Each structure stands twice: as structure tokens, then as C-alpha cells.
Amino acid sequence: MTSRHLTLSLTAAALASACGTPMTPSMKPAEDKAEYSLGRLVVADATTGKLTVIDLDDRTTPGTLMLDNPGTVYASATNPGGFVFATQRMQNRTQLVESGTEFEEHGDHYHVKKKAPSLKPTAITGALPTHYTHHQGWTSLFNDGDGTVDFINDTQLARGELTPRRAATGTAHHGVALVHGERLVATMSMPSVTMLPDGGMSTSNLAAGATDRALSAPDTVIDTFASCTSLHGEFTTASHVVFGCANGALAMKWNAATKKFEGTVIPNPAGRMERVGTVEGHEKLPVFIGNFDRAPANGLAVIDPRSNTISPMALPTRRFAFRVDEKGEHVLVLTMDGNLHKFKLNAAGTALVADGMPLKVMPEYAMWPASPPRPAMTMGWDRVYVSDPRDGTVKEVKIEEWKLEHTFTVGGAPASLTLTSMSPDWASKGDHDHDHSGGK
Image (cartoon, rainbow, N blue to C red):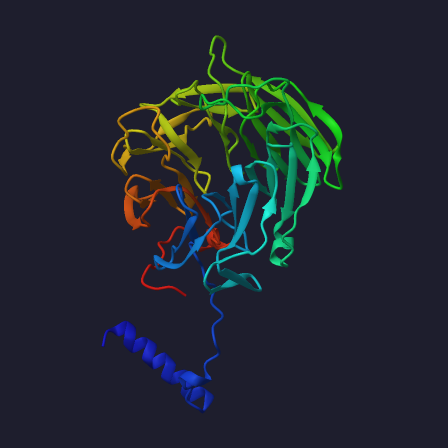
């Protein structure tokens, strides 16, 4: 027996003697421990309606579901209800999936309960549902076919109320909408068909700008921001809504005093003809990250609303996807050579710099444009997940350690994936590793 163990034993004996009665294990008060989950990963097949649900805590597959058609899956990582929206654009429908993970609040922490995932029986119908957003507990789906917006909050979903409200923008176009506080921000259409950022032709118009509407009266326009040509892509924080434009980026800053948005177009650098068509960000970041390229995809840009500047950065080869991690510390980029790149902001917060060497996660794609289906990426807590539709796998990479942690084999052609049911208080646990030895 070590001196430490001896001290603990003597202390326990002394306490028992002082109380007069030895404390047995059954007499000890139960400790109410917090429980944490890395969430569940939902992987959609490109050629069938198959959804594979992976529990990331024990790396099991608690369920496989079948959509009516191949779908694209979207979710909020920390949605407490674990709802996944599976859009089927050409079939004019979105089906809802419950991940099967539930969080029971216990004062300042949560307990985790798990069951099999399920497909809700009623679908959301809309004309060409395409762009999904989730902000401040609200999910919005933009229907390109008629320009309507379906929006619903997490509380309604948790109560089993699965029918969203609908607002109209008036014209079919390839748009986007989001809820910001008590406002609904929705795009408005351009007068003609426009080339999409990936080089394809849209089946409806791209947007020409954005409108501000009260959430209580979403069909009435309060204000218009019309100086963003060929609008595509958005990201939202508490202070800003930023859209990509052919002429730069539209930054809408919320003024709490006047209860109005103040819109500014951040121009492209002089002489540069690339464009922003996708925007990412994080509440912790003072800037936004956009793509910056003409087809084919080959660059990124730091969009800075503080200085009203866009700072481009070339990539070593063409890009499939990029995301900001859940901590707001890194930008992850997947390129067609099969490498995953990790960048961070420089000390001034004005440019991206490499953080380590590229990590090989899959064989390269030899030709561009790569034939669909193409790889996809989604973020977890200190992890990034990348699908390879060529061999039916999903790779899990730990961001801090910068290593390939695990390969999931799901079969088929996994081309869309999303993560949900990550513990709402996961960040409070710190940066400790998670035990994969068994599920809860």
C-alpha cells in the first residue's frame, strides 16, 4: 500500500469512527454527474434514399433509414431535439429525421438518453427546397421554385409541431432566408437567369439583394438591400448577416438602438474578377471566410466588416469544401488532391495562415470538374468528418492532434453528411478526449 492510499484509508476510517457508524456504499449519496455526447452523424447516399446514422460515442450504427428519394441532409450540431432536415429538391419535399439522442436537463448540466433514430411520417412540401439555415434556434428552408420560405423553431420541433410557417418573397429564385432575432431576412430575385458559382446554370434566378422583414409579419418588407448582384451564400452571427456577391460581399450589421440593419457592400479588391459564393464564420471570429474564385474553385478570402476589405488567399489546388470548426479556431479545407488543410487567422486577424502540414485523407481526384457525387464535410467537437463516395467511407479526423482517428465504412456513395445531437454544454467539458469504449 502506498502512502497516498494509506492516508486515504486512515481518513475514511477516522470519519467513520467520528460518525459512530461505518458508511456503506449503499449509504453514500448518489452523485449527479453530467453526461456528454459527441453526437450522431447522419450520412446520406447519393444514389438511393439510404441514411446511415452513426453514434459517435461508441461508433455503432443505431439505425439505417430510407428516404423516399436520395436527399441532402442538414442539421444544427447542438439542436437539442436532434432533428435532421433531408431535402429532396426535385421531388419538392423535405423529410424530417430524429436522431434518437435526448438531453434531460439537470440544473446546470444534462443527462443523455439514447434510442433508435426515426423518420417522421409527415414531410414538408415546398417547390424546389434548397438552401437550409439554422440560427438562434430557428431553421429556415428556401424554396427556389416559388421563392417561399418555410421557418420553424427548435421548441416547436421538440413539442412535435412539425409544420413550419411560410413567407413569400414574390418571385422564384435561388435564394436564402434566415431568422435574426425578431426579424426574417430573405433574398429577392434578379431579373435574369445567372451563372451559379460552380459554373452551372440555375433553374431559377440568383438573388439581387436581401430584404428585412418582421418575424411577426414576414410577407411585409421593412427595408431592402439591393446592391448585391448574383447573391449566393450566407453566414449569420449575433451582430452581422453576410452574403456573397459577384461584386464582393453584403454585410448587414444589426443596430440594436435603431432596431434596423445597416447594409454595406464590401468590394472585391481592385482588378479581381473572382467572387464570393459561400460564406462561413463563427461568433468568436471578427471576420468571415468566403470562397473566392471563378469556376473551377481555387481560393478563399477573409471578409472583414471592420475594415470593409476582402483579402484573397490562393489554395494549392482546387477545393471541394471548407468549414470553420466548432470552436471558431480553425478553417478546414478539403482539396481535390485528397488533402485536408488546417488554417488559422494571423495575430492581426486579417489573413489565414497554415497551421501544420496538409493531411492526406483520401486518394486524389485526377480530373476537374470531378464527376458527382463529390466528397462532403461536416464538423463535430474538435473533429471533422469527410465522406468519400468512391469507396463508401467517412473519415474522422481529430483537429488538435491533426490525425486520422477512424474510418467508418457505410457503403454505397456517401455524398452528404451532417452532425446533430452534440451535447449543448460540450464546450464546458474542456478539450479532453472522449471515451469510445462504450455508449451511454
